[in-house]
Image (cartoon, rainbow, N blue to C red; front, side):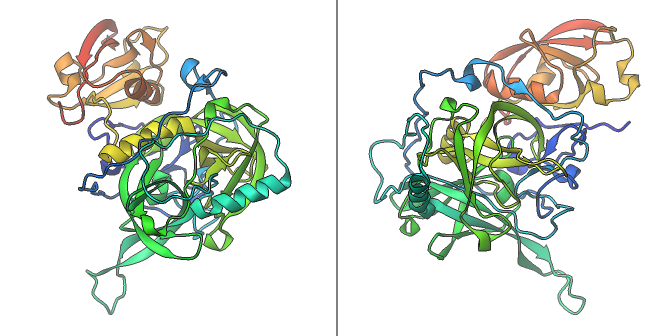
Length: 468
């Protein structure tokens, strides 16, 4: 049995980490090449190093949505795990507009659907921060939805990904390269600040790009710069000249969503020729936990499930409520034959802090442990020798980065991590989730580890990826 050595902590910035293979393609939703037959996508691309914007720009921080009287399930309860076991072996659970090659839909542009409310007549930056509009979902007439869609269309853009490809002309210069369009998606203009306008989209839409072209509602085109990306959450922030922007979109409070609420997806399915297509559906479920594989490693992402039609090219698009507020960014779908109406969006409440940090620093700083990992249930039986019979799951340490927090704590290759601060850890995705959401750089963690069949406790003080 083959298994994966995930050395995901050596570099935890998404655009500088080697692509990882999906070790269990029968169970995971993948943003990488491992599930090429199961992913709604268009091309194969390898992330390239994207330089952060050097100049310092003041911006309006997006305030978190006000806490409603309803329970915020994403923060106050454990999300429901749903990894689609059983029928996911052939399931086209994909990134809607991804950096992968789609066997069923080759060579089609991957698009994004974006709905955003607000035709905010943006002029210049205001001293007040951009705040999500908090309002309770209501039933809306077809006329009011049409009015809302018409208003927010000016905040919806197309994102075209160009990459450098080697010139294969036998009569030309074999060392030359040319810029080739490798895919397209969508984006939402969510903020205008002086001379800069910011766009949110999916990381897999911009990953590997040497150039990003923005197509605006009135047909104008301009080039975007990458402000920052985060592969684990599949989010990216771009910036363009604000002179092109006449409206921005508002974020709604995704914690108020309930199954059955009306939602609408707007985007560019199958290409910019079908831009601003509107589809209607409901919230099918909230707080789904979907296992995905990204260029930064395995991750259990929290998503909204919807039956609104989402097609290749809708990636990065918006899911809106009847008030026209963006309550999710579409990112995944299931395209299994015979399966319909299973799409997934990143909740607005989850993306707001990521977007704010990307604008501030161009990256997401996360705690660094410094180990290469493999899921215990995916490795050969030789690694189970001397393990107690009651230990069925855990994370196998494959290698250790010298001078890292793990090295200083005394970790050794073949150690099996089974808990962190008393919380059971079943696999590498759970370890990463705990590390990135429950603790921070500088915190001390107690690890329960099995070594040669005996349980030991190791204590590690977390650093960032630079060892600080």
